[in-house]
Length: 112
Image 1 (cartoon, rainbow, N blue to C red):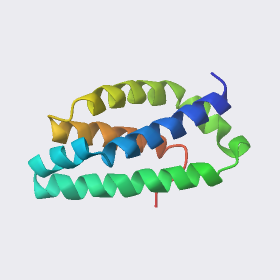
Image 2 (tube, one colour):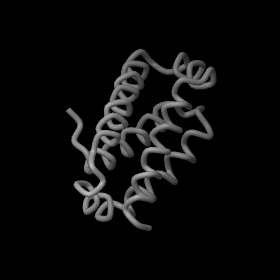
Image 3 (cartoon, one colour):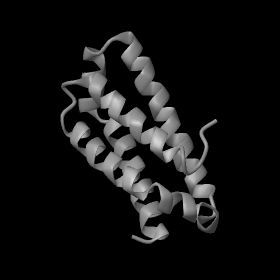
Image 4 (spheres, helix red, strand yellow):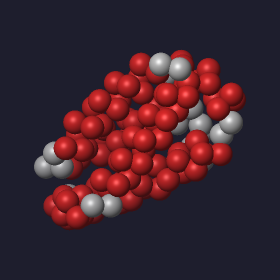
């Protein structure tokens, strides 16, 4: 894939994840989780928003090498994230998977 495709896939996955995290199913799953898991989920939503803004403001030429260098990890992380988001029964595991993807995406643009 070229850098533009990787960039587009990354943004699409972040958008898809945020959409899932604002769904009624997510809300129900979060209420079955602990208070700590709910706080963690809210923090991750903020991280995803920050990544979306940073990526949206980034100049593709400036992050092209980082996108290519992390292509395999992004694709693998995306696969695992999509699987995790299909079943919210193990809420803690879903949060772990989201955190892992955020970490990978954070290699492209820094999280504050």
